[in-house]
Length: 266
Image (cartoon, rainbow, N blue to C red; front, side, top):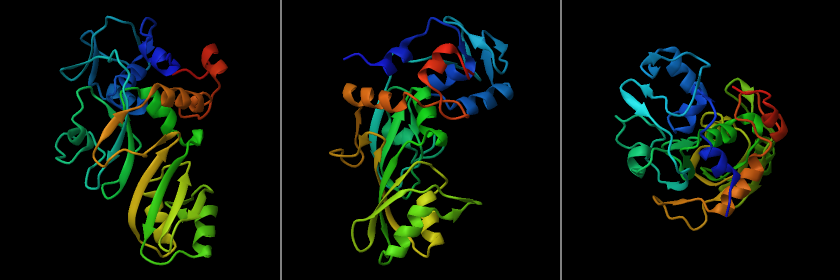
């Protein structure tokens, strides 16, 4: 089955922004790539790279002494992250998700799950997917099952769904549903630092268990803890449809036609 996400990933003949190249190679986000370029750590054909420069196939890109190359195969994995595993690429971290997964192709995570949380984590070597899913302006859903330390009330559900004041802001309205005496489901379209835990804490509750069960159209169903699988072509096609109007740029959404016309390119 053909897939537009895969096809775009494999198109390498045209000049591409260096930050996009690094992102699509699974090194880091575009923003982080710009920081690496600005600090002088990136070279192209032995010369210090410049912010905003474009490269063409055949040029040698390095970070320090390590050559960076894009993979010929696009990888998107669904991982059931156990508790205790840290979402970081820091090699000195013994319990990093990269070490735990030990995947033969370099992949990075799409949205962190904190060390004490578990469940669905997407990992890929396609930087555009990472950027489009992670941009808060794109309003993509992430679903969690949460257990707290005392009984859930209607007042708690209403306040959670309407938005809670944390981190000098008020969280977006979200979908919240009671599943049991101490358990609820919540669907977020943003990803503030430790958002669910902070929201619950602000309302006098402590999170005892936090499980992510869905990211957009990808679910945890049938995936055992500590295991991973590749996304199917059907899932990738559904994901492509959901990402169609999404932007990988800081400004938020852009249409496919705007991308075709070159509007907002970095």
